[in-house]
Each structure stands twice: as C-alpha cells, then as structure tokens.
Length: 521
Image (cartoon, rainbow, N blue to C red; front, side):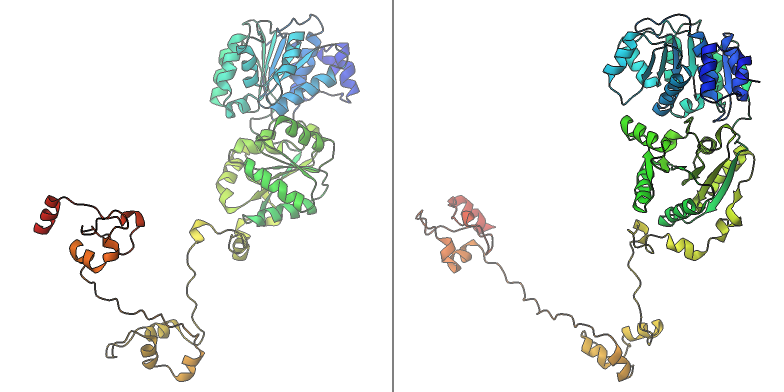
C-alpha cells in the first residue's frame, strides 16, 4: 500500500514524497482513511510507529477548505509536554509546505504577547499543552467554539502528569459535534473511562500489543555497583559499544541529570542536558544541538521519554532503571524507529532488582545480561569501591562512628585489657607511674609502647568559705562599701560577689524596717 491509496490530497502527497516517505506505517494505513471519513479514532500503538503523521496528514487534507477566524481556531491538538508540542508544529511545517495555514503554538516558557498575536490573527491549527490553553481560555483570549477536530495525543502520559482533569474541562469547552482523535500507547482504567465519555462510536486501531517493545531494538543489561563506579561503567560502555553514533541517556531524577551531564563533560564527552527545571529556550537549544549533531549525548529525565521523534538515535542508555515499567518501553522506543536497528542498554544495581522484574513481566520477555555477567557476579571488592569511604567522598550518617582503637602487633587485645585493669591486691594509686610500676610486662615491651602523656595534676579545691553577711562585708571591703560621691558612708551595701559591675557598686539606702527584718532572719 502507498500513500496515494489512502485518499490524501495532492498537496499533501507532494509534501510526503518530498520528505522521502513512500509506504505508510500500519497505524497510518488504518487511521488515515477513517480520519478523512470524519469518524472518531482510538489509536493504540507503541511509540515510534508514526502516530503523529497518522493525524497530521489527514488534518491537512481537510483544512484545505475554509478559513480560521480571530481567536477561534479550527483544530486543536493537545500534547503533554512542550517538546512534543514543538515537534508536532515541525510536522505541520514539513507536511504543510504547500498549504497556507496558520499554526499557533501555546506552551509554557514563552511570552504571552507573541502567542496572543498568532491567536488574534486566526489559527487553523492550534497545538497546546493543557495548562497554557486553559490560561488563555480563562483570560478570554481564546474561544474553542469553532473546533472541528480535537486530537488528544499521548493520553497515558497525560494521565501520569495529572492532566486528566484539565482534559475533561477542555472537552467540555469544545463543540459536541467535533471529531475526536485519541492516541495512547497503553490503556489504563482511567483512560478507558475517558474514551467512553468523550468519544462517539470510535474506530479502535491497535497495531501492536500494549506495552510491547520493538523487535528492532536489541536490549541488554549491564551489572554495576552504585556510586561513582556507575558513572565509570557508563563511560566505558559509551567508548566500547559497536556502531555508536549518538545516544540518549535517561535518569530518574532531575538532580542526577545535572550531575551526570557535568561528569560527562568533565571527561571529554560532547553532552547536553534536558530536564523539566530548564527554561524553554534552553531545552529547545539543547534538543536542537543533539538533532544537528553538535553533541553526541543528551542526558534526559522522563520529560523526553514520550513521543520525541529524533531520527537516527543509535543507542539508549538507562543510567537509572525506571521505577515504572511503562517508562522503560517509552525510553527505549527513542531508538530503533521506522524499522531501523537500535540498542538499549540498562545499567542495573542491586537496588534495581525489583524494578527489573516488573519490566520483564510487562514486556513478556527476559532481557539478556551482557556476557552473562549478572549482579551475582559482582565481587565484594566491586561493592566496596562504590562505598563513600573507599572513594574518599563524604561519609553518610551511618558511617559517622568512631574507628576502633588499633592495638599493637606485639600486644594482643586480651593482654592489653589485663594490663589496663589493675589487680585487686595492688595498692591503690591514681597516677600513670603507679600503673607502670605494677605492669607485669617486661621492660622491653613497655619501652616500645607509645608514650602517653601524663594527665595534668590539678591542685585540690580549697574548702568553701562562708560568705559574710552584708554588714561584715561592708567592714571588710570599705572601698566598695563607700560611695564615691554621694556621701552615704555609713550605710550597708548588699553584696553580689567580688566581680560586680561598676554600676551596681553604688550603695543602696535601706529603710530601718528592712534592716531589722534582715537581722531577725
């Protein structure tokens, strides 16, 4: 089957042929005729099967007639991430080269002014993420009453990112008579409920079993200790793999993406980074540098795992085994696309065994280990090399314990314990000289023992003297009992000690009744 047999317009066919495609993929061959017929479509296919072109090409054919009005786009495509939205925009630019269509992109990280200008000009195709779209709608800058075709792409990813409530709100804002195209790699219960609520008698197209991996991807596991040894394992793999052209490296956390990116650059690799904390301009610049070959490696979090169409990716490295088994399928789907061969290598530590078992259960196969080296083959030395103490790094809280006291080779632990304990019949003495006198070891053994400093001998504390009352104190210290300038020479002073601030040394004139009560007490 060729694209000409699918019913596409001549302008679209010319653009497809100019792109070098002649044969549609299975999901394109089944979905394009149904979309052109105006039916709702539920497409279930693994990543990398050409889902984007499956709705882009028929939409271009249908948009050749008619024109968009200001603030009222004709079609709406919802994507879970900014990268996917920008990628779909590129597809419309490539396949719609013969069309004079206005395409608007509403994503975060870009100023409202430029996006509002495109909306006011009239958009035939609106590509958006749910959050920014609702923001425009709530401000009154966008009307969804003219939507003819609604596309919800990567629906299972929408579920993972918590966008399902936003999707439900958007579906209620668009006309009831619109055509809905729904694409997802998996069908969880929540996604099934969503399709039943917003799709009308859809055509179900499933070209591959759910959560299956492509047969063109060679999957390998590599055992490694954790810590810096894991980064060393990755560097060794990058240098030693066959047919290496470029690679996407996945980490579970954004912090690990930054650490690994810096480490690779330090060791001379041309590497970029892509994670959610980067601003939109930096994310697009890093992605473009990888596509253009300016960098060979790009370290990503799962924000880049879904739907990114990066051609000719030869390898995918899972630096961290994904916590969710479904993410493994989407990660390795970045290679081996469009029938090309690819390699996916996962670095596994002992802490990843549970996640690995879930992945193998999901994909229905056992992933082979590299050269049969499993986690059981890791020696104790390999594990110790990964510990913070061995690598000279910062010790963890569990390691902050005092090291055991080392004993001399000439002195066994038991003997040293006996020498520290004085015998019961020995005369009592508190000094080290006495302990030395009763030491049962020969003089040679005592001479080789490290010299110990004798404790400082403190003088015995003098007995506490009775503090005289205020009358006696005034006679003993007349210099403090007398005021310098107020003339009260014969009045007693309430003492507070020898070191008293000067402002408290002035005598206090007490009433006779107070003095009498003090004498009686």
